[in-house]
Image 1 (cartoon, rainbow, N blue to C red):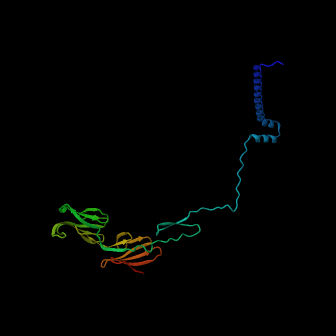
Image 2: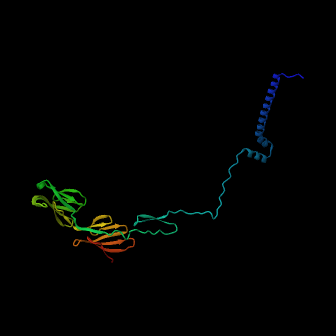
Image 3: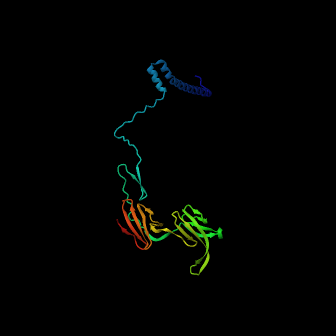
Length: 283
């Protein structure tokens, strides 16, 4: 047998290697083609049931239809209703009523022990219109008036009206009158004088430098941290307690007050004095 040369051996090895690669590639392509053609072959050569089975291989499985959930005693249904809310005026708080009970009781701290009113003084009220001066001279002079209710400054002459106060200026003059200076001698100066009339037909004389007093009396009371001047008939509410000014007396200075408690409907009569604590007279 003739011995092969080295270059021939190498050629044979390469030939066999290329042949193996070609066989492997052909085998994979043929198998893939057979797998792709299998449904078609089944459809063309099989029964309707086989065709449906072949279609199941190529179509995605659908989601199952939803089913009703089970019902039983474990299921609970409840209708929501807003809670009942109450505002308590004495405490300034809100209370929420529970679903199975009544509104909780509220203890009003200090409702019965609220600071009793104290009488600080009694005085006669100022007349609502005060004469404070004048401008001009002679017949052209105008009176300078102050509306004590609004704080306005008004220039008025005889015949003018102040509708807000229901007053009319009947007469106005500037006179040369004596003026007393404290801790000094008396001098004479020009001073304004006016006569006014109210809606009831009552006339008053107003003089510059002299505070004109009204017909009513005022009681200066301290109720809690506040101080205020109140006429007869005025009412002040502090929490559930309401104080009504019934009568103001000048000599000696005292005030009759009615105390009403809205929490229990009780009523109490008080007499306030300037230098003593209130006396209680339970009716």
